[in-house]
Image 1 (tube, one colour):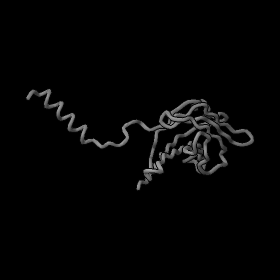
Image 2: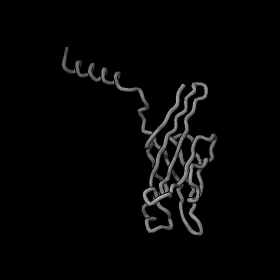
Image 3: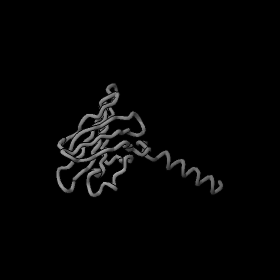
Image 4: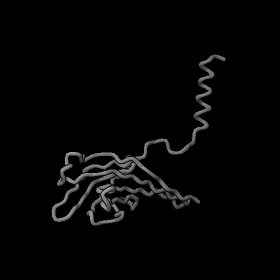
Length: 141
């Protein structure tokens, strides 16, 4: 057997042994991001999970837990966590992927520091950016 054939067979064997978990990069694609403070601190933006449906999210820094974003379904929630200096202005996103018939439910979470347009760091904030999935949970039958 030629060396190239042996290498090719080895690569096929490694690929077959690799876990079949999701291979694509999971991320939230945020666009039209607006966040600012005057008499209160408010934000709104659009977001899509893995290039899927776009949701619209809006809220205030007084919100302390995930809020439902509007879309065709209720799968995406978000808020900006401002609880402590360590978590100041952290955009938190959650996407729920459920299959009732199969009895599965997976939640994907992402977070990223954001900056208000009215802050001294306003130049650090982009209107369009990606937030990688940082953790996931799942329940299966």
